[in-house]
Length: 82
Image (tube, rainbow, N blue to C red; front, side):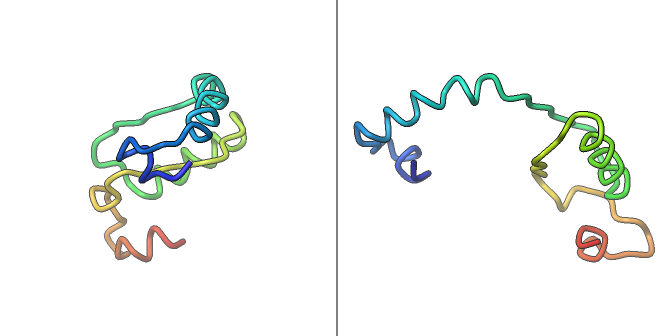
């Protein structure tokens, strides 16, 4: 289903059926939110690696990447890319 259809409320009947079929999958999906302020990029990297090993983590979404702390010797761009 196209995101702009969801946002604008213009889903057709087929899209509504698709959403209804997937609703429970989304509701049952494990979700973990970490709101630790000022988390460093290396700390997040370590946490993600641990969760991949122990929880089978398959996706990470970072909101507000510019608020993360990069190591002093690295730019944020370099720290995120490695």
